[in-house]
Image 1 (cartoon, rainbow, N blue to C red):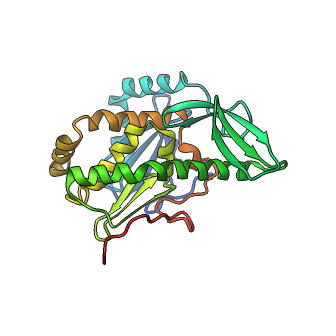
Image 2: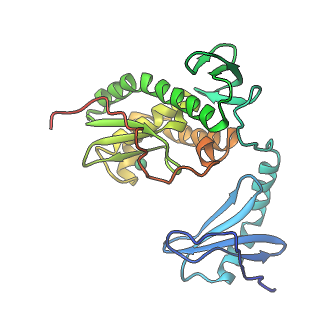
Length: 280
Ligand SMILES: [Zn+2]
């Protein structure tokens, strides 16, 4: 068996490791990314079903080949599932496109107006813009509307779960995050929710809120954290699965990743909304 070990010129190296290489495993093209991690991770990526294995630096190609060989049937099933999906077309912000809000799919209707741009939920998602408003700006108007919708429901949701769990956050906010649904700074007692959650059913938002608030009791994701989730939100495993599934099936890679404009963890200037502060 020959390995076609060739660096891919179009790939940038990861943050902490060598650039990916590609090998052939019985006709399957497998991309290997070596980095400073402890375990081997195998993923089948949307949209095309690319097989990517992330490995610790010391794992060689033969070990990857054995692992991929053992998982061959599973990989084929995942690839078949991806192939059944409708193709993903980047949003052009044009009438007729579908956009999600609170877990429901709406048809976008772009309406030209002389007044202030705004979004209105009618039979569809009505986006009022001035003549000549481009894609980026249309998207920005919609995202701002998404943000306000989250900010409208979050105070009650957070307050309810603070009371149920017995914690208080000092601050919370909504921002774009590329790789996480939420985050919690346990020292500052500040939580962030991903703007993307505006597109999801409310129960997904609730799941992420509970998850982040519970970090105020337990920072890690170990047995204690899971036990706390079991107590407060017994259906959390199902919700987590649905959250991931919704995100990948409706608009894989999320509405923000397409233009590559967001770096993971970067706070976006102007996106912070701190609605509540505890006395310092
Ligand atoms: Zn967490």
